[in-house]
Each structure stands twice: as C-alpha cells, then as structure tokens.
Amino acid sequence: MKGKAVYPGTFDPITLGHLDVIKRGVKLFDGLVIAVAQNPYKKPLFNASERKKLVEQSVKGIKGVKVRVFDGLLVDFAKKEKANVILRGLREMSDFPLEFQQALVNRKMAPNIETVFVMTNESHFYLSSSLVKEIAMYGGRLDDFVPKPVEKALKEKYEGMRKNKSK
Image (tube, rainbow, N blue to C red):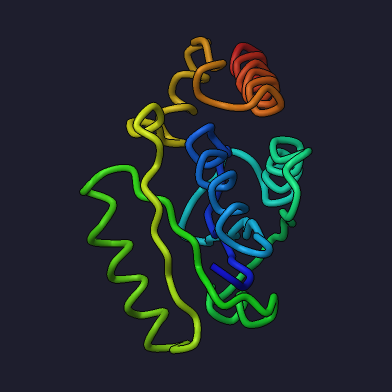
C-alpha cells in the first residue's frame, strides 16, 4: 500500500503486541507515525512525554517510524501529518465492535482517510497494557511482554510508588 499511516494509541505502556503492529505497518506503508494520545478520560501511569520517550526507545532502529504526541481528534491529527491511513491492531473479537465504530465515525469526518486493521500476532493475542501494569505492580517478570526500556521504566515507577507508600 502506498501512503502514510498513523498508528494511534495511549501506549501506557507500549507492549510487544504494539511493536508487532508497528513492524508490520512499516512494511505496508511509506511512512508510519506513532501517535501517542493524550486522553483526558484515561489516567495513564506514565505522562505523555514519558510514553513518547518509551515508544521512541522501543522503536529505535525501525526505519520509517516517527513518534508524535497528539491531543484532539485523530482525523485532525492525521490530516496535519498528511496521512491517508489510520492503522489499528486487533487482538481479539471483543476489540472489533469499538474499533469498527471508531473507524466509521472517522470515515464520516474524513472520507479520504482509510482505516486498516491488522491482527496482532497470536503470540501477543492476550496482551494488554493493563495486564502488563498489573504484572509490574506485583513485581512479576515482564521480558515476554514489553521491550527492555519499558520493563526498566515500569520497575522504577512501581518501586518508587512502593517506597512512597511505606513512608
């Protein structure tokens, strides 16, 4: 496929499942912008600049990728980036209804921007950022779930929270 794609998400934190979608996205499009969302309805563990940095560290060495933070409507961001595609990863059937609804609304607002879905590799099918944070909170092993920079950041974040609680 030709053109530039935007891959949006909160990425709190980025997982190996996200990286799988990113690696396949760069093969499909001429350029890929990873759009780190500032969603006022979510309470992320990492702030937007921390999430952007973790994504940048995780995609280091993958050609054709840029990382940006955005706030507002995704279609407005895509237009600003001159992207003609929104890339979305699907893990399981329960993801589909909301993703489908969002794709239809985005098409209504920006008919020239297509949404393309890719299925996450089956080895990451079960993986979510929420699950990763729960494992990290209890000091579990993370190397099968997140890139090394994210593993380090999660350990530091939760160790800091535990130390503050014990004071």
